[in-house]
Length: 369
Image (cartoon, rainbow, N blue to C red):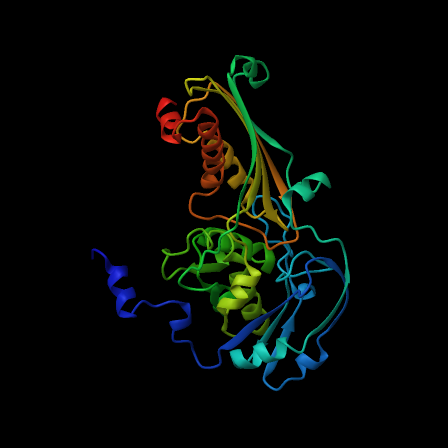
């Protein structure tokens, strides 16, 4: 039926994972995460948390039967921290209890000691220290080295774009329960069910065909559920498999915002050359992408930034270089536009500065090119 979701949303009738009727005996999970941005784990004390009435189990990386890895493009992201933490909000342990309130309370009693290491949050600083997730990528046409001499006006500048929170309608969450024959069903708030299935298979050490993924609704994720829903689905599946019980894991909004990545912030350098009539002849740009602590989808996002670096303009000589910089922030991820807006914004800044120099409106340069 046309506009089905709109009508359901407005009436408050849309069902999300937290609205599902769960069976008696369902357990609830809460995630204990790192309070420090970077450091080596010296000790992790679960004793007080484990003794809270109603707590059934606390899971760490040691309990993972398969591989402690959820990285897609690059395998550089553990599901649960092992020896180091790399950002505030990095999952360390999963507390499973008979109510969500008990699980949350118990998580507050976990004690962790961390020896601090250097914290990097600026992508330019990461670049200077060689903290790159992948080698630099270059998108080029023509020859910018020889084109500058033909330009009447050459302008250079710096441009920054910030991050952005997805604020999806439904926070990250999942409901998992065991099936017969050692199989598992996970109801996940994801935009990528196959990714959840594949990753869960690796972490749980069981074949993909023993894992069934169900998605209630796909809309309203804005990219934040493309890869980043996977971790929570796998955690719920791991807990359900370990305890042989249904397990529900729903992140509170505040924790969701702390623990998950945003739109990638960028810091960029540009150089643009034009004729006095406003024709753009040459353009160079360097993108310093703040990828966060692991790759997630940042390499693919950076590719699209390069592809869109000239926006809708024809420029005969272009050199765009992208740097995927590792920092101590939650892994940044897909967001509407997927790197395109960050690339287009920089050339619009360059055109704006050029328009001031040529004493014309920016629209004049836009139309000419």
